[in-house]
Length: 345
Ligand SMILES: C[S@@+](CC[C@H](N)C(=O)[O-])C[C@H]1O[C@@H](n2cnc3c(N)ncnc32)[C@H](O)[C@@H]1O
Image (cartoon, rainbow, N blue to C red):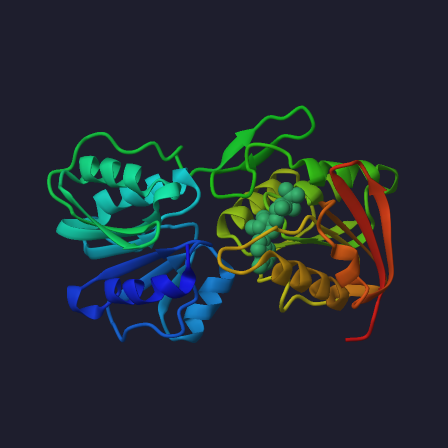
């Protein structure tokens, strides 16, 4: 989906004249440079960088995993969203629209044909008991307009989106939920990272888990002498990670950040399986930001370990920020890169 092309239709959808409007944003949503001046426009996002961006614009924005409880049921005039890549989340949004829109209230969804927008059109129309207007905006991208009428009884399958659940895995049991990166499995790259470090575990001292997800790296690394700092951009990941830290009674904190910005530096260890992409940002931007943050946050004598797919040229970038860059292991799919001696910023 092209960010620039969607800005204008999105701004039209967010205009003030409708009454109480709620915009739902996940990583698939752009950072608009300005919002329409609408006193009754609210935003919910599960991404901390989007939260910070829209807060700086003066918007009424909440950073939660799409908690609708601040609103009363049947109180909203319009809900707007670009459909999520995660089906459970899009289904959850449509279910919430059925509950929180006023009778006659409007749901506006944007999405691509390849992202299932036609199927969402059919399902939302059935649930909201109304026809659906489908407008082709450009190329593959469509806008749906639906006006809630007689609700059908059957909600869409959102996999009980809002609930954390306990997952049992031969290696590790943990809390997770839809909306958390790879929540139903242990990431193969992360498992490789921890297998390679097995002799050094548990890690002693201050350990930063950069992009923690549900906290797999932290749970594997921590022992009685570990002080964890787990950080992620995603509200769902942070709540799952906090539940795991509490369950295993580990020492440390769970903090929302955008690529570690604002965290107090001086870590003895940094563990990271960086994200490949985020919404509209490019993969290489994000890799660069993670490596730069690692150099800023690591102690001069500290060790940072990054695991990435073989095709990601993290070492080249890392040489701009670290004096020592070594590939510690390579299993044919992933490589483990050891970074030491951050260069002065
Ligand atoms: C490949 S996953 C690794 C998750 C976890 N460490 C694991 O091993 O299972 C990358 C994580 O980075 C997070 N992430 C993406 N963009 C981020 C950003 N700008 N700042 C912080 N974390 C981010 C994602 O939410 C995701 O949890």
